[in-house]
Length: 422
Image (cartoon, rainbow, N blue to C red; front, top):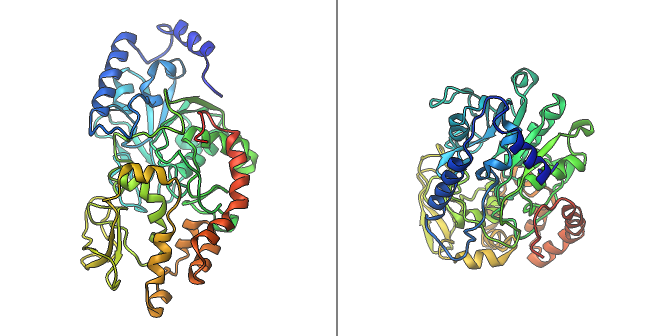
């Protein structure tokens, strides 16, 4: 449900009479503005809209919901108001935070992709941290018994195989099963200006793709949550009671510069724009720069004979055992592409994959795709791998996506909270 003016007025009337959070409207507003200015003062670029305000920064839009409630927070290092973490902000406002639920990469966002995240305590506040990555991807009833309201505030990048929407799905399901409302503090989608890629087929469903959406789905997390609810994608047709706070001044035509890197291997906007195209290489023998400082901006292989760039992956934050560790990889560097060019492309660049494969020897082609089915899980079907092996052109591959993409776009429009890019 959308938070409307009536609810806001009711919240303001109740202010000062409810529960455990205490707010000062003037002080909080000034703090939010200062934090926002600090965040947006970093590397100012004309390509990005500086007036966009994420929902978390708009405390007075949701304070009436959290006052007097025992809170559970589904958050990570991106859950910030400027430079201050949401946990620290709510903690200083004397809110009752009973649990922090941490997704892939952990609460502080430093764990490797796919690495098990352990339970623990937040060293600053002492709040228990429950991992939602590893064996326990879904909160269970015992972990929710002292929660009145769950809050989801995580920066997504708008790509199907980026696992935070999978975490959100399991949280929605757990909330529905335990009759706990979920408040989603929306954030802009940096890849929200287009929709592209094959639709996930049911047989390729996994944590890197739970729903029949394309690789680039064109939704914010709040829009995505509405789609999950109303399309019946939760177990046994469950529906989660949603409260949503929208971003201010955002629409799908605008470009938003993330103030915090969303995960260890997406260090900047170049990597975020290239991620949808380059991540498909993760299902192959090709390195996409994990273990370097140009993650998802370069790609190559030790035996690749073409290309004008070489790099050597080594262990580091978010990549303890990178692919081809210690080996010289030959390939390409895409960091010279301008931000405007990447923004205006508005499509997956599958030619990167096709051209690399076609340049390989027959022996290398036979070993190109990993044997663990990961490429098919990422692409969402078995067709793309076959099309690449059969040297099908990028235009023909795109044409094969169109019927399902057209159907998806009609469904997507039902759940948009902001002006669309078309």
